[in-house]
Image (tube, rainbow, N blue to C red; front, side, top):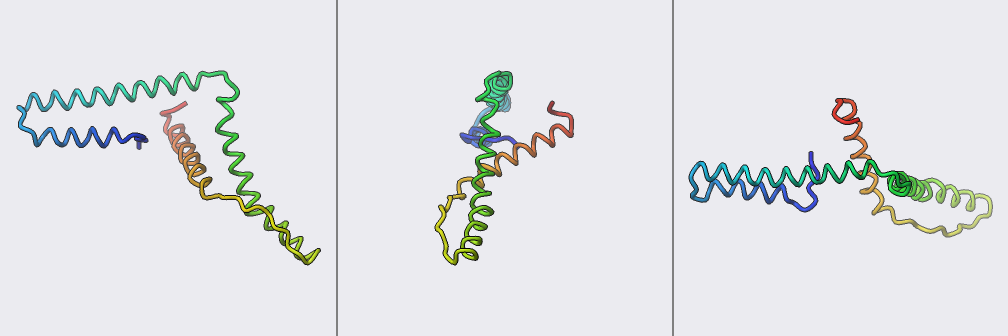
Length: 133
């Protein structure tokens, strides 16, 4: 399944489906469909080239950004669901008072994690099938 950020695939499919409704000859219809497919293929090739250049970069920042985001997400989830509740439990039982701890907003983190895990799963699937290195 391809990721379609700007909806170009939907637009192209709508145009291709609409070509059949417009009064073109069979040859003109097929020519238009081929041209649209070529434009989409060029876009995919350009993205593949960008990905290839990105993968060859020797920049530490570029290679560390994904793991750093993952560790930040893990830290926030760990603090919110493990450390702070334990801290509250210990304070309540030892000192008979509750210290307020910061509530971290995790609503924005879960989509990031799901996206990262989904991409990692797709990469693992590709490696298993032998389609990626």
